[in-house]
Length: 382
Ligand SMILES: *Cc1c(COP(=O)(O)O)cnc(C)c1O
Image (cartoon, rainbow, N blue to C red):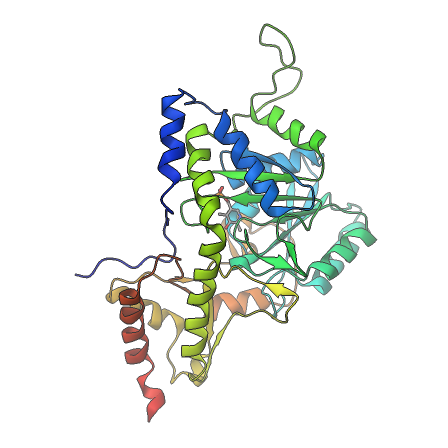
């Protein structure tokens, strides 16, 4: 059996181990230290816009802290893009708050501005103004940033950017992660860069970052003994993990280019296949890191074949693919949550598939993928 081709697997650049070794040699084996500071500085330099970054144990933890810092309380409502990974919405539940899910639009597959405004207006009419909006740059594709920001400003609701999948993407030349009032990043094993597990909160000023770090290290007051005036969390990033992150930052741009190249390879292939479309940038304002390449298959135009048929064909060849993320308003755990939209996300989920997209895919991997695709779509030749 051939080796498994993964959707997105860790891709080390080579210098990561030097930073980790240094941590061992200097005994900084703790959730603080030079690598944590260095990794934060690397991220700040990369993102620009004078942001302040706090390195944390996960993207989920970062989103939890973001909601705390925005003052979300039990019973509050928080708007969230429905088409996303569960970690975008779970922190709303951690707060005892209520998620309100909003549909996608067809250009970027992210927050639909029209449905977003409808949701805000309706929730206000029902007596509760949403405390925050969580927008997601799914698969690395920036959401309709200008439109979303304008709506959030109009109703004076803070925008949290879930940029877990979009480090290296830009909108109008500005990096994703700097576009909202606050943002989160993830360095999980499957993301564009990894620290084995980790995340970060991106803040507009140092006071907010300091508060995030304070909360992430058990909210210890300034005293010789352990003293606490607030509930804290154990969410800080380990200095070992941050060492991996420092090495990964050296290859981030290279890996973005490799993912974009993989995306172009798929786009070129599918250009000749009727009924298959590849998620692509609506115009030059959008620059995606193409963390994952995702396609939509129309069975009517694909000889009756579905995305599930393609997934199984790939699986038989030991190649991983995955249906698009199942929208949150369709998840059993969120079945009570309000939803606004016109089922765009639902239709995408029915017909969409994510394909192997790693920056470490070899020419041989491409050949194996192409063999399955050519066999699967050979009916198109007749
Ligand atoms: C991965 C991911 C997260 C969570 O990040 P972790 O570091 O795994 O906790 C949040 N949102 C989205 C969209 C993600 O893809």
